Image 1 (cartoon, one colour):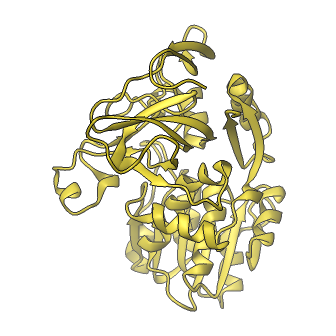
Image 2 (cartoon, rainbow, N blue to C red):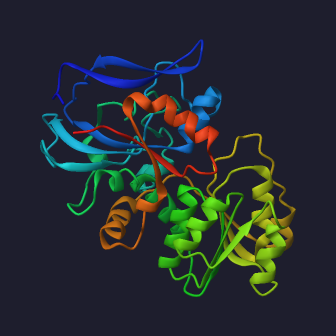
Image 3 (cartoon, rainbow, N blue to C red):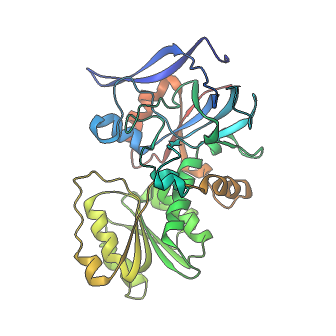
Length: 353
């Protein structure tokens, strides 16, 4: 592949009709505090799929290159970028922040007033990593340990999200935890909850394939919500009381309701699943049961924690990678994620060396 300057291929959203086109674009040039990264692997996030299908919901707009879960190699650096050099293996924190608002002054960069992510048109248009190259600020780079592959590196974004959710929940030794949704992040939440000291973890999903993998990754209780009432099942299995902590990773009104009702009185419910603004959530269970409701989006300090866990084998992500596609197959990757959603966990877009 080529260095700074010249042309690259990218998967670009086009409208009328809505589609993905593989197009030739100029390789972006680094500004002084930026680096150019040659992409080796990039995860296809559920928000990419939903955003492509529903343009208004996730900022996946005309002309955008999606992709916010990349790993790769530094190929060029701006004149003021000094921590990395050409050839370094890295992962990218896709979140950008202003560095000046109240949240940023407290190092809560994931909830910056002006923040957003690469590969999205929400709160700023920044091209993503479903391409041969991407430019990002040097501060967004983290070194990929030598023992980890680029595929594992591309999983750090969901891993960091899951660890952040568990940190927000304040899970303690001996807690009983319920995880709503056995997608990629839900299965990472399962593992992070176990690492945090959870005694038992129940995982709820509608896919037997996903639940089988949850069992292999350490789940103590598997609940297919198509076959039983998940609220009653969690309560029955957790001493008729409910879960000390529930991690909601689906993001629809019904799972919000179920998550609240399966959480014990004065327990904690963490909402991670990205619901539409129109999703309804009844507050009565929170008042009547005195629940602690915690919001969760993105992550702050958890990238390096996640890389350390991956390096030590404390978080398993290889089993979550179910599909691999070339850059030219990006449209096929999206169709597969939709048509075979019960069998797809994480699909990666791979750029061969």
